[in-house]
Length: 71
Image (tube, rainbow, N blue to C red):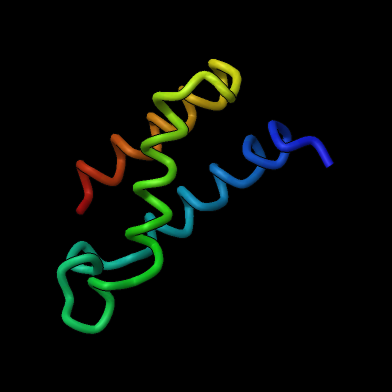
């Protein structure tokens, strides 16, 4: 399976799902230690590295910008 295609398909779905989360999701006692925090850190590293295409990195950057704005 093509990892680039998988990332391009996954990121918009992930974006839409995160958009449904309450604003305090990452601060709430129950969910603040969620595995999603680690996922976000990984995505941040991927957006800066050169192992993915510019298109994938831009999409990741857009997702991370959204997260900073919303949460």
